[in-house]
Image 1 (cartoon, helix red, strand yellow):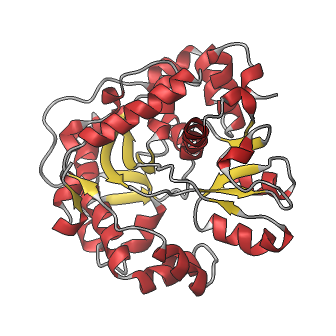
Image 2: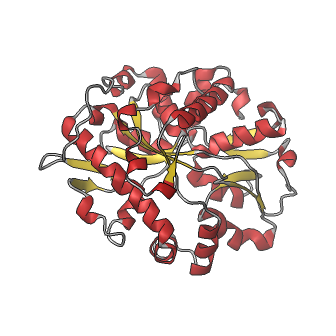
Length: 355
């Protein structure tokens, strides 16, 4: 079944959310409980002092966890991290928010759109922008695909609630290929590798270091990477409404944002140590591949104003709505602008984006 075989937008959303490894879409469609996940809209003045003693957060930001010690940032963490769930996929984070097992997470800009669409209340509290492509389309071994123009009639790995899904939609739109001219195979991004290896899909977007590991293994069998200039602009920190409505936890979120931003700046400035810490020891790639991956990246940037980020998020939400994947929405509701600029003020000028 392809996404265009599904008779309604609601059915499409439910189907794709289920395929993303969660039951969120089905729960949203048939259970009144999802309404309780929204919570009251955060309001009032943002706490400015240190979090009170005993404050705890569960934070799904694995890279910051690894950066704390080598970057000397442990001293700046003035609250307790009860756990560091090693989860990154948007559907998993949304499920964690609903289960109240995750208080703060890092994702691309797409999961907050998906969460809002199914009634899970959460807000973006920090923004990093990337003005260069983060994903490459990997082909199955033996595929004849050489460019996006070759995607017509092909099976494409597609995860609606994750950045990879919108990268697919944007790439197709830019190439003038309609959704109906391809087969979008609904899978969580964690299954893209298996789907490529087994030729369940012809092509799927991969990020690093997954791309390097895949091509190292299957390049000899004809797998290749197809590059595009499609940008996945945003990396965001976001938190459930109920966390932001708790003054102690909101203060802890505010205190964490500078730690997150400075950790990313440290990794950029200490690339050899970060390659060894993350790419080699944590992700299992060679030091040589780690250096190549890092060399392909750009300096992390944190916008002083969120206007550009909100405009990009609106364009993305509109693209998803036009495809019937989410209802129309005003994405301004996804951003808690009380936190605007905190990340930018925490880093040196070269890491700030003026607009």
